[in-house]
Image (cartoon, rainbow, N blue to C red):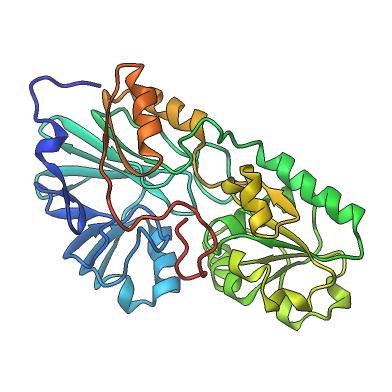
Length: 350
């Protein structure tokens, strides 16, 4: 979609110290510091900061923000916005569409005087039983992440990675398999994938994973029999699967487990050196971000003549889309993470 008689989004969507600011609407998208009006794409801590006066987001994102931050810090005024429902903020038409990243994750679509920009937040294109799938929106400017924007990153089917995990459990029935997965999104996705693969036994969780799993259940995502790992006997954990924050899998906490097989679910497990440096015995390449092919396919699908890249491997993606006549711009916004996944449960980067 291209308009020659309407303002370019650069005229009304600006990069300011607090983040990406929609001037005619008077609001920021995922601001990095407290502001008066914020539209939040999803509840990971690098996108959803505490202390905003007015917050608009999907109902699921707001619910998760309240669990993680506390009711008072998730926004003085909290407005739930259903997917696809258009509202007018200032002079701008705004709506949310699913981003497929985690439960409640949304793209923010904005139109002003015939010019349309879409801020994707973080997104993936692979199916996920725990959240609504990404929906492409034709636009003039597409604001994209680039976490895995290098040709080496081509994610395998997650079902194949879960099959590797279950094969290892069958091979080593006397050992506990402990899977590092960040608390929001990855943990619940791994659980749902295990259930779909036929694992109907209890799944044990580090205490940091419990509150968000309970919230997913409350929001209608079934996860099955979940139990705290801290109250289980070591003998009960032989042959079991335990999910914990990445920072805990090689920590003293893991010593309570029965000869643990250390696993880590991350797109970064494609890089063997990362797995070795973390002491990971069984790397699982499961990511909640789009890979190289998916990023490029998405740019083509939305049909934007221009992309803005917020964080990640900007140069490679900008160079690649330029071959197809798409202009790229690196926004270099500070404060967003890149799925390092070794951060504490309350501060992971997605």
